[in-house]
Image (cartoon, rainbow, N blue to C red; front, side, top):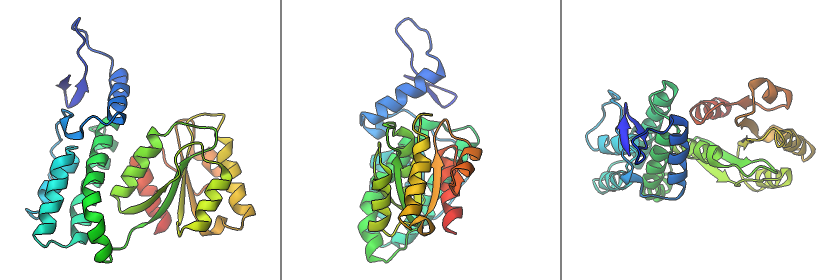
Length: 261
């Protein structure tokens, strides 16, 4: 594998270069198979972001998709007595915000977002116990799932990771989630946002079915509903009564923030 303009490109034995679309799919499959995250050859883009020296390695490791350095840097900051809330907000959340910006500007793509998000998750696993003891409040709680009949979850998983990187708590119901399961999750949690995903046109109607189930259960006013997925549009989201539509993971974070503001 080589790097061309910061993009990973596979070089087969015959010397030809695979199309970028194929490479992106290949990279997602590799990541899903849990290849060591910081063995992935990726270069970061200069961000121009500066912060306290003890936080900079955390920010850089997440931006660069390096899991082990992210964990080590978070632990080092904790060992030095640094405030957990500042580690989260000034380094980790800031890094994921920068990842989102780079994605929106076309400098990062889905594979870069995935490995950055997973590096963040590794660091967050070390930080979480300290956040609880320091009474650091989350941005909100999100119930996420791919709707009934749809087994696709890569996009939903990326949205969950990006939201977690933005300091939201995530209740991930997985894929093929029935309206009844969404309703039960709202009843049993203090979630204030539902995030539904669909990749098939045949499963899109189950989003409306879920919203209607929330109304029937008297729970619609308790939660905001955001939807996303390849076949969806903003118009469709409005037609089914959703509160918002996000075309990608980066804008899903911005949408979730606006819904809980």
